[in-house]
Image (cartoon, rainbow, N blue to C red):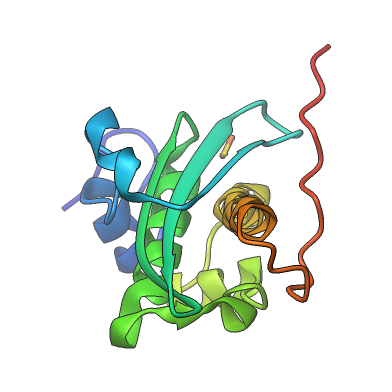
Length: 152
Ligand code: FES
């Protein structure tokens, strides 16, 4: 299939996740079941990302996210959410080690100018883990306080 105008420059995986994002928050009512929440802004484009996690026995057993970001941010965060929930949920320490590159590798790459979009989900994840750690006195988890958004 050929798209109008520019050819689709994204991998098949990116396209799949963009068209059918996994774990996207559809209804505000869903968020009552979560125990960590993070919200971050992308300083490059001003887009926002919110993420909710449910942690049980040190594992992330549920994730929801919502963004006003672009296709790359949607595809990357969808992939990230899938990675977190694989094999019954990822341990927090391991989740904190996920990088934008890990997500991109799983997606089969992104166009270079879109790389900053792929970190939005992982920053929101760190912010959600920070929130969980604060509320549950998990001070041993080495997660930095998220950078407050700057409003200009
Ligand atoms: S352009 Fe803003 S998240 Fe991609």
